[in-house]
Length: 138
Image 1 (tube, one colour):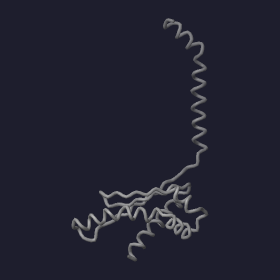
Image 2 (cartoon, helix red, strand yellow):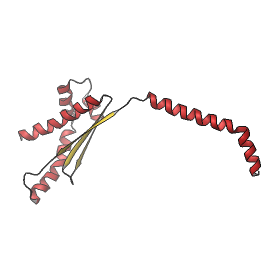
Image 3 (cartoon, rainbow, N blue to C red):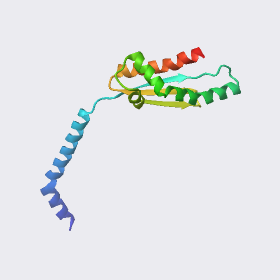
Image 4 (cartoon, helix red, strand yellow):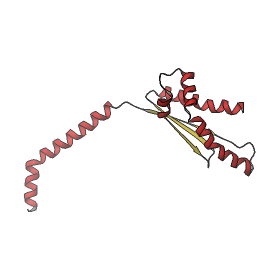
């Protein structure tokens, strides 16, 4: 086949290509409009060593993963549910949460995803306050 044959076929069948492209774009737009918006609230807690020496810094680094594990428990999730009177299980709440510990910056972070942005902020704040209150009691 020569180039002229390809151009002839493109002129004859070009409407099919355009139609398929438009249908695909329309379907993608419709699908994206049907999706529920999900908001993410992120809270970062700075864990400072009590003294600026090497030993205290190392202890703080080792505590970071303990704090993350402490926050990530279903018991803490249930405490947040009870405090905010949420209609969900601890497992569902944990499924909407992400926890991380960064030993370089001494930060424990948690991120909450929810369809309500205010509720996502409230959950993240309540969860962070649990760790702060627990630390103040220690």
